[in-house]
Image 1: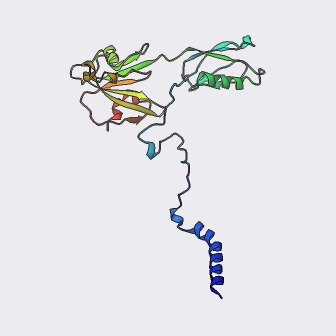
Image 2: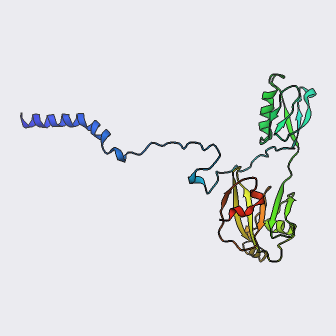
Length: 245
């Protein structure tokens, strides 16, 4: 075989084998496929997210709770107009159709649920829902304050103002304040504030404005180690010390 024929044969073999070689070379270096994490079902956060909640909605709508009163209006069928109370089991009783579970829903979600419930009674029903009575905004103050308890939150109120409303800090209490704010159905955020600095004009921007449902806790002793986020439970608001290791 001549030199030219030999070179030609080598080039043909290289062209035929190159795709197999490239596709099969160094398989360990290929990036692994991306697999979406399996849903946890909401019972327990994954280990990677155990110290922080998911992003919260910026302007969350009010969600109906037990004992709230709703006014239902049917512009095209006024005979169905009525006021309903959210029962202890979360249902409302309706006229001429089955009961509907509304606890935890927003008003727009309730409108959708009612339209489905009345679909067999009315054709393309038009329904308006007004929230007539509802859970009033409140905050809770606990620990070393003069009057621990739940207070109505009717106006813009800062932490220092809320402490004053709750009777101030008791003798022996510390000026260290812990603010608990629910950021999602499963998580509560904890912030440490120094009331002494706020009163003396230092870090005044830390005098946070309270949100409905916030809890303030004044400890008996100074605390340096605490959890920034803690899982929410029914007893969280009544046992703020769960944030401390």
